[in-house]
Image 1 (spheres, rainbow, N blue to C red):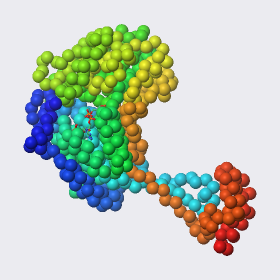
Image 2: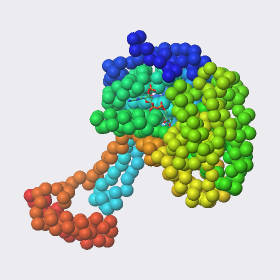
Image 3: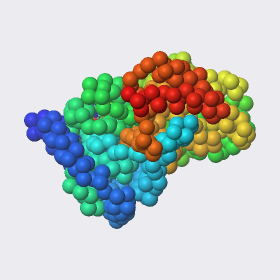
Image 4: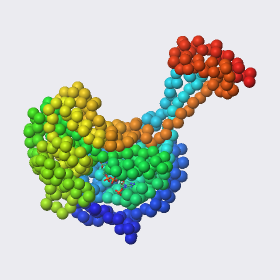
Length: 524
Ligand code: NDP
């Protein structure tokens, strides 16, 4: 593992996975530190929830300014802790989160506007209902290391705009990016303890769950997600789980193959394949398989791999030795089970750091273990199909369901197929990038997760709906109140057969019985 926890000194040392150089050190927060952070956060949340949306918006826009003033510095920090190219740190982390910030700064009030609810015939009794959205309190954020800036920051922005305070536990591989997030909010002038960062390893994350925040936003593996859900259940803390993927890309013969090949290369190899929505399985219609493969291999050959600070580098280092070993294991599984490595298939011998060559594999099929388990590395296995039904069946043959893409010039077919794919987001003639659209919900079907981040659906995870019900004619007792009697029972029968039909006409015939019951109640 590149980042090591030195328990004697109670520090985590963060290393650059491309060079092995130390990037910096952070303290390991103890369970007591974490509990204290949640307690302080809860106290801060009482004031923060009273702030107006306008005040929150102004602070958030200031935080954007802080980031804009430091784009290069932040991108360098991201690349040093994660190994990804400088350009990718800007394009895939900083730019999307800046967009998310302005969107939620400007629109949260509108998205959380109290909503009047139609309550049918109850309205005729002078009642009205509305939903208002209350903040939860403290939101605990536990992200993975692959997008160490945009994922926790985006979640923090949404939580804060909704009136919550946050405690973030960054991955032990990228703790300094986590600390940077706290500094940004501090510089922007957010109140003390509105945004706190506790640093450490998995046990610090576990301590954050134990400390009973009001919500846990978790991004990571299925195995850890299940542990967190179980631990959170003890305090009835609700969780959003953004977990793994094995995302399929389906290319039909009528697709723009040049574009599909470029998309496959980017979708499989950006961030060295360490994206939950990476293309991990490509299914191409038999008649164009050879042509698409040739194009993909040619484009892969032209990719420059190297240190992220060089602007012409497209593929950087992987984040950890553990991750690169999974890639090696999967490539070995492909080899052993009869697939063909067209290009790549090894650590890059030019470097000592954690560089795995972009790898294109043909003759893959769903019976291979590596076509079922998440790889999270720069591999692009290609399999073929003949019919639309087969493509859908192969794409759905997975425990995961995060994203998918369908490539065809026939938009009706694209949408028909998309609707049958079991995944939280399906793109037609696009790939991977929709996490970057803050306006749209993000989350998985099946083992890819629970709940949503982003979009209105994601915002709803960060508030609790409160129903406010008003009786505007509060002069008479309700017919269903005590004491009961034979008249009451007769009236209740009428409720069941007439009022509950939803028909105004039928309900009108209940009026004499209702008046009888009310008169009875007024006498008692
Ligand atoms: P892990 O599940 O190992 O870790 C995720 C986070 O949880 C880290 O911060 C980790 O800390 C922390 N953690 C570990 N153990 C515990 C515990 N018992 N209690 C609380 N927190 C804990 O995932 P990876 O870091 O390996 O991330 C890769 C996974 O993330 C992939 O499966 C990927 O698909 C998924 N992912 C999903 C996304 C989505 O949106 N659906 C987006 C990005 C990634 P530490 O690192 O310090 O051990």
